[in-house]
Length: 100
Image (cartoon, rainbow, N blue to C red; front, top):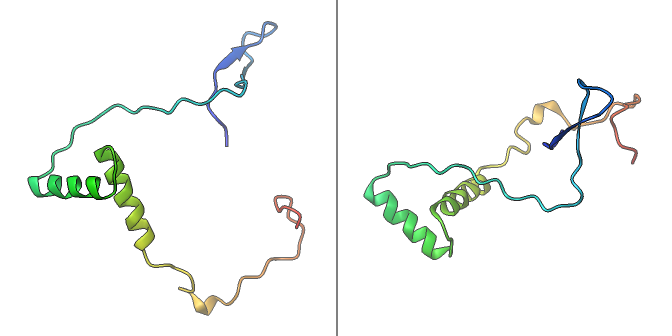
């Protein structure tokens, strides 16, 4: 996966650009623009309760916490297709497989 970086231009070619690597600098967190949403009063009260109980700072943190909790409570799909049998790797050479 490519990482975003600043582009530098080589002096010998005007059309050829390569990404510059950062010299071990810390990445600043990306601050996304704020938005407004409309919720009813009961939802706001529940969000405030979760915020206090979990010692979270922002409503964004509360919503992310609720997403994580929901993801953890989803049922596992392990064994959902028993008719397929156990997984076995093919023995042919695979250039993308890491040596074991």
